[in-house]
Amino acid sequence: MSSNSVNKTAVIIGASRGLGLGLVQEYLKRGWRVIGTERANNPSSSLRNLLTSHSSQLRIEKIDINSTNEISMLKTNLKGESIDLLFVNAGVMDERTQNVGEASTEEFNRLMITNALSPMRVIETLADLVKIKGTIAVMSSGLGSVTANTTGTTELYRASKAALNMFLKSYAARAGAERTLLAMIPGWVKTDMGGPGAQLEVETSVRGMADAIETRNAQAGVFFVNYKNAIMPW
Ligand SMILES: NC(=O)c1ccc[n+]([C@@H]2O[C@H](COP(=O)([O-])OP(=O)(O)OC[C@H]3O[C@@H](n4cnc5c(N)ncnc54)[C@H](OP(=O)(O)O)[C@@H]3O)[C@@H](O)[C@H]2O)c1
Image (spheres, rainbow, N blue to C red):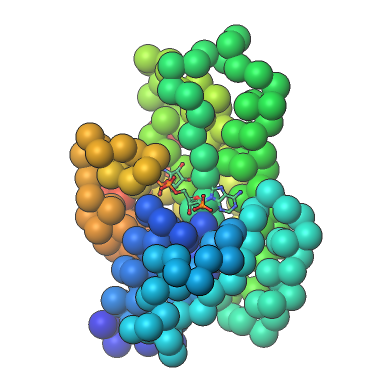
């Protein structure tokens, strides 16, 4: 635990498993107070199990980010909090081989709403609880880079993360001010979404992202950055 991490608060949205759960564990390890969210009320979830060892450091809230009512309820529940890091991690993947011409309208809406619209609604609603020099991060993806897309595939997912990046840039231009705004690339990580053949362990990715966030926090502005703190092309 580093001395400057004491009394810091992170809110991790979408922390039931995978990278979100990993981020909660990483920030607990760093001595932060962590508010993690999950969308189900499951008394034996992996997140809830962390309460056994971290009851004074961890608080759990429930939110499905696609519900505007639940976003409002979360805002009410977090009243009085002074947040150092708001990280909206929740996201979904589409059928990787399906191109945009084959996608149903329902699938397009599911990806765009969950990966682009809802994360920004969470940010717009909770931003005034984030310290003026705090960090707001969204979980983007290397697949969200328009510049780096030379292969196609996972087309809805790519478009949803590119849209998320664009929304974050708009937010930065309009309301960024002194804050650090990050569109994070976690790498290709072994989670339910990334699959067992992915390159990185969750622990490696979240440790790198937390280090990148700590370094970038000194700088106001909006950055598309990977878990090694390297700037990526939008
Ligand atoms: N793994 C990778 O290689 C990789 C690479 C680039 C980017 N990413 C991004 O990293 C983030 C986390 O991915 P992951 O690999 O950890 O995936 P994951 O294991 O599938 O976990 C996804 C998380 O998002 C939550 N979630 C999904 N829809 C939600 C909703 N409507 N409301 C609230 N929570 C919701 C899930 O909650 P439930 O448990 O309730 O479903 C779960 O906690 C995603 O944004 C993903 O796009 C992952």
